[in-house]
Amino acid sequence: MDELRAKGVELVAGSVTDPAGVTRAKYVPLRRLGDFQRSGMGVSPSWSVFCVDSGIAFTPTIGVAGDLRIRIDPTTARVVDDGIAWAPGNLTDQAGDPAPLCVRSLLARTERAAADRGLTALVGAELECTMIAPDGGPASTGPWSPYGIRTSLEHSAFLVDLATTADRAGLSIEQIHTEYGHDQLEVSLAPTTAVAAADAVILTRIVLGRAAARHGLRISFAPVAFEGAAGNGAHLHLSLADADGPLFSGGDGPYGIRPAGGSAIAGVVDALPDLLGVYAGSALSALRLKPGNWAGAVACWGLENREAAVRFIAATPGSPHGANAELKLVDPSANPYLAAAAFLGSALRGVDRKMDLPAEIPENPAQSASAPAPLATDQLSVVDALERSDVAAELLTPEMIEAVVAVRRHELATYGGRPAAETTQALRLAWSC
Ligand code: GLU
Ligand code: MG
Image (cartoon, rainbow, N blue to C red; front, side, top):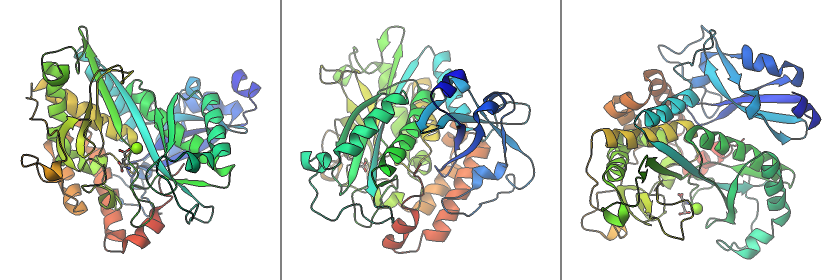
């Protein structure tokens, strides 16, 4: 508390990110920091079925009765704005035990499941996003150069502010660039343990939003922010190691992949149709997840293949963090804790079952005779598949599946039939922090 006071903190926010991927928060004055840890702040179970708009998708088991608490660990609090510190929250019951709807606790359990198998997992996140004008329209109308030095330098004051604020918040940014899409930005983060990686995604979204606001901008984390625009991905990188070293290098398989590493990749690819509703389940996700968008719309893997759902990066001097598997099809409407738990959990499932590494698709799947067809983009069937999935039942909690299915069905019922221009406008800022 003294440290935060010395940094000028007046209010402390504790947030939870819900099954719709929206981050929600409660604040306490700094003097109540200890209460935020010991007792937590009350939230209705309906927080988990709040939708991307103001809708509430009550389910038979998630209703108006009962109470949960958001509890924070004060040592994780970071200054994110003048006078404001933020910490990631766990959702607990009144006794302080993890609630079945707590995505952060689920990811921590998945991390422990890896440790029980003698494995350590590191996760790295990339955040693609779109700069937006204060009125919610396009930030700029001039020509755009993908990865252009001009398009980035025109935002130099914002980018420097972003780097400084991130540094003050203890965030380990690896790289920043202007992306392919008009007004699109990307920030990539250093790999770290799974819960810390998902926490860092939320912190980065907050820091991006705050820095952008100081420069007359807002930030969209919609999978597609404007009709016809390039999509925003939320790619996750995973590396695994056991006592003998990394699973994705040093072995006899392709690119040095060891047998357990091959099984991990196989597990991830195998579970994609079941878990697509977790990775890319929103009413806007199907606009992005199409062949040709570098979004990984095909359930296969390939070395540095941008059209494969799993893009493999081998251990070379060009890869300072070593070999890893990048899951490209995740978009920012996904809850990052849930997406990371599904990614890591499905890798562990592949290891447990000693699954065989499927054949690599080294070229564009659209031009490959052996590649599978692109994943389903009929969102209703994607959500139905998640509801019925034995894999999801194994890796998530029933309450979480029920909540994800409920909020996504609400989105599809509300926005599913509407023109893309209307849906992108309605949901453009839904996932912003
Ligand atoms: N914007 C693309 C996506 O939606 C990814 C582009 C890239 O490979 O960085 O995932
Ligand atoms: Mg990118």
